[in-house]
Image (cartoon, rainbow, N blue to C red; front, side, top):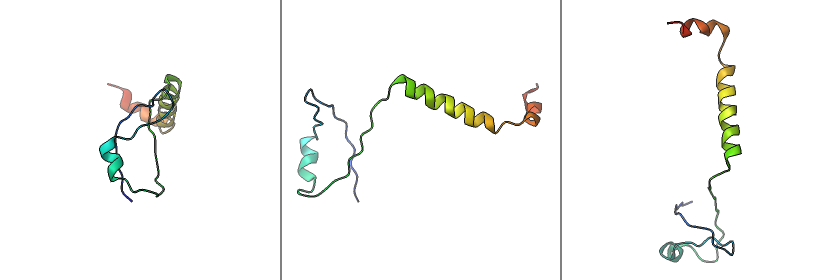
Length: 70
């Protein structure tokens, strides 16, 4: 399997153009796997941050408090 990466912008018709130079190199009449990465909304980012903090603190035992003292 080969992979390529490029940036593009979804147009007003909801289409995602592939750069011409890249399109010329793609295999014709074959299935491809497409993965889209795009910015998420702030709510999702906040949820991930909260979950990360919760999971980190789960590993914090009361005995670890000795390291918090100066």
